[in-house]
Image (cartoon, rainbow, N blue to C red):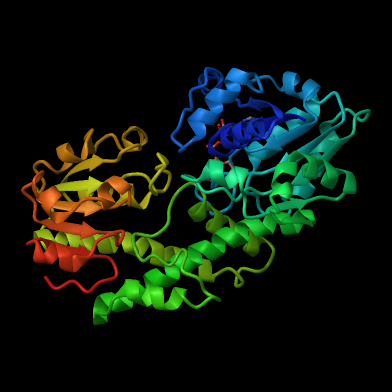
Length: 439
Ligand code: NAD
């Protein structure tokens, strides 16, 4: 099929390359000419495991092209996927849907053949109905343009695998022909037996934000229990294991630690609260503000532990291991790791940050921190080390291997990746989130 993907950020670039992998002819479109230039040259402007290879392969086969021209895709594609951003509105919790509206308007004004527009961005419930109005006002009435919503559930770090082998596909449609078109686009997933849920616009929009709200709540639930174990003692990881073995609960997203961040969960739970309030249901989603408070308190706890171990932060040298919001990503949007590094710096510590992939993005956001090109350089003169993102490179450290690189004998495990006993018995002062700290 001839498919365009509008917006080629994390979501769109992944979707475009994976559709080409599935055998479709794909054009990716973005309003950012630098991004398009880089993608067209087969170079991925961000890090995502396995994606650079796919991009390169299909730019090579000619099945994947890139453009900034709406006229080009409007005349050519039969299906247009929307993957533009829906960031948090400045100074408010609600989602800014102006990029989605602008993209639909540009498509409406340039589509010259019958086509289906399929939204993938995460949007507040009711957006698709509003976009239908935008379409109606701006399209050429002699062409038929359908609208559907197909929210995206991919996880950064696993984006290629999640796109090629999703847990489920949800489509909101109002016309059986549009359902057939989407089944044809995703025929490979159907053959793998991936559940295909066909529903209305509102349910499709809500499934996505509900999934993110639920995941955020699960993370904050275990982190709220961490606050109890930090006071009374007890082992938060054993508690999580005991909880997660209940099949109704499950073990995933029950890892106590520094909490969630990134370009999706924080903004999506704020947007859901804002939308619920607009609809007169402020109380229904009010608990999400507690979920967020618990999440932010984890960052305070990491700074508290660093302060407790060093006596005071001013003038002390601290190595912050990790800047990305999670491993296998270079995304630092709303990153708990980077936030902790900045808080330590603001409290007077000299902070050396090292992340295997996210130094560049972090330095663009917070140039005043010091960035090092290797783990060894970051810890070389440290008084204290904090593990803030659970990259494999950090998880594989042992007290002995790390002691060869640094004079520090103090470590904060903010991601619960180590056994405290092991580090203590090797002579390190060890603290972790969720565990009682005996200074
Ligand atoms: P992003 O900021 O990386 O990419 C958005 C892209 O859209 C940018 O390249 C921007 O230049 C482009 N753009 C903006 N306006 C445009 C327009 N009018 N026409 C064409 N291009 C335009 O964002 P992202 O992380 O890819 O997220 C995109 C959407 O997908 C959001 O709604 C997000 O919530 C959702 N989502 C993201 C993920 C993820 O893991 N990143 C997962 C699921 C859903």
